[in-house]
Length: 245
Image 1 (cartoon, rainbow, N blue to C red):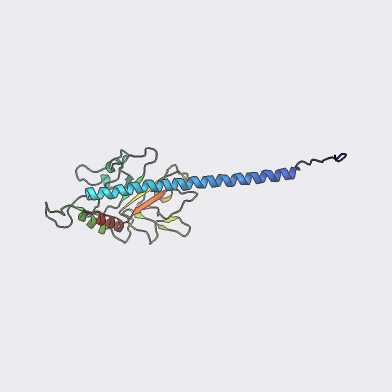
Image 2 (cartoon, rainbow, N blue to C red):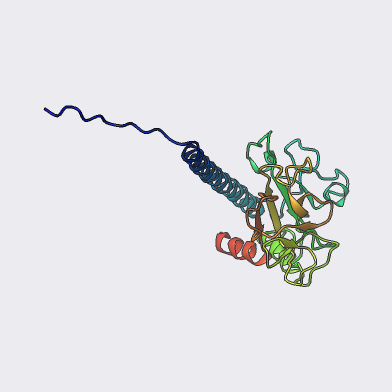
């Protein structure tokens, strides 16, 4: 038996305690950022999946109707067309996705933006007309081939008077004046949160009233978390060509 020997207990000094608290705080901050980053990635993945569902629905809409739908300008879920001219209401190119017209169910909390390139008549892709000189009653009369003609007329040279997709800067932000910008057949924008704090769920150039849409290559940033899906004319022509029966 050992006797006469005391075990001296030593507590933390104030300096050591302060150091421990700092370490715990830093670890907590790292954990917070890690969870926040995981939430951001999950949100982005969900938005991309939602956009792909709508993209596919738009493709099949063209296949069935030989044109793209007009945007939904009044948030009722249907494309908005002038009853007399059958053109898109007000000549607009950017509105909401016409969910009901596509056979989809709209998200009431977070409606997706839809933009469609609209050339001058007779090559407005939202308008059904004969463009290949087929006679009425012929198999190709006002068919998919006519939609393809309209898509081929979308110019490679960008004009700010029609819907276009921005170029991308070295820092990842979008540049509406960049020479690498392009005209799409259509675009989809899934807004997530109001990152730039302007009261609009759409961030950056997507919140502007211009025809410029942020590049799909623009990464998640402190002031930007929109997801943009772009369908090029050639991509849509290729899909339609593969699915013509």
